[in-house]
Length: 105
Image 1 (cartoon, helix red, strand yellow):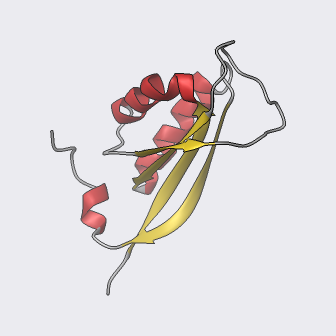
Image 2 (cartoon, helix red, strand yellow):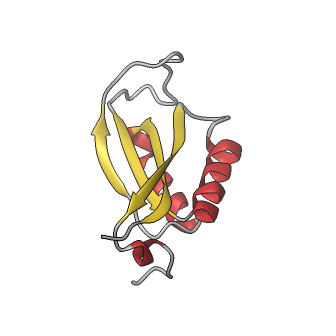
């Protein structure tokens, strides 16, 4: 079995941001994402909304250049204004061509 090295971008944010954040992730070049509920406590424990609610975890598998661009968008446009955390992980995937081509509508 052959694998291809790619990046996993993981983002944890307030659930109220999920739609806007996933649209921004796709607009920045991601070919797809996985969204799931997340719970936890962080150092800031702040929310941009008084609505409360849980967090979401968004995972994006992408080639290094795309993952870097996505992280830069988060750092410059989202981190200053919202309770968002993100990290990159080196991973290897089977069928790596799925993460390098244009998005299919």
